[in-house]
Image 1 (cartoon, rainbow, N blue to C red):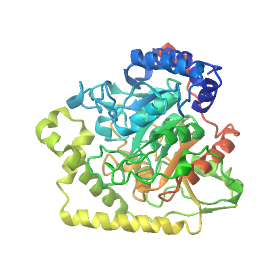
Image 2: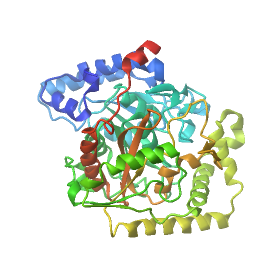
Image 3: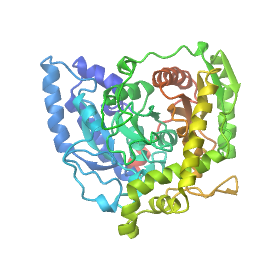
Length: 480
């Protein structure tokens, strides 16, 4: 990987600023890579090359003229197909919106473009983001870059694959039960779930539900921090979207790991975990315990009622956002969307009240743990990538799972505590596929988590067994 499209976003932006490379050259490199690889993985589902070329040409003139340049000046990016992009088709992975072209960008995309980012295309997602398998009835499935027959996870799977294969240096995503974190784990890239409101989302169906967040993806923690700094802002249309921490717009400095106390949890005390993932995680963590001042094996104060509380609150969100669609167009919707809305019929107002109370207790108990540690480390996923022909794994270690969501519990269990959480590459798992390390701390700890993730990433990169894996591009080209 030696083309311009393989540069990190930070390095590409530096070279654009010093006039070593042109935004036009960078864009053409990204387009060439996309055209060569995308047929094998199906991650970039709508492109806007002509407009991107116009914007790149303007960005080149501005750089040569010595004009002030934005944080992302000249950097191509992919936008998850759940995010509205003015003048560019936004399907949300649904047949109901197959030909939808918004009039304007939503706030998060507008911020990225205002900071100099150049939208190159839309990345694939499950319908309305439901389910951690990027597969829908509009575009089909997106394949894992390490084995296109397997899933890249979801729902930001198209973004993760586009990054892993060098189609774009940056991509946007969103996360409810792991949609930024699980694809990052499965594809060997970095995904960051910010605290609620750090990236405002004025289009959430339930504005007072803090679980759904927008966030950045990249190939390095520094790239993710760069994109986050461009996405942050104040937006009163999002009840959580105000009061941005100014530190998040400052250059990222890696943390001093020797001063940090960490808790290490294999399964958060509640998540079913494939035996091979558990064994691999245990061995890898044992190799880095010494870098912290203290590393203790400790689970958060979670219990099995967490799963039901998550399911109830998720159903509230889905019923609000998609209940009417199901009444009118059930036959056009994918199974995961239908399952979420149908599940809501089995819950009562008493269930919803109980779930809110339970979640509040989970949140407060999680915070209390951080009186004694600064970070929590855990696996990003319960399983290795599985065939995307399956909507979801039906069992783990031979034990049947109760629904399509349970395999995502290493991510969604933490969602219930609304932390800041970053997933970094953690080498290959027991099946030779990428796996991720999840690094998190309480709501509002975004800067700490990113700084720690950058430092841990550097340590992991120095070990062959934990370094970021790279897909075989020649093999993907041959498959095409």
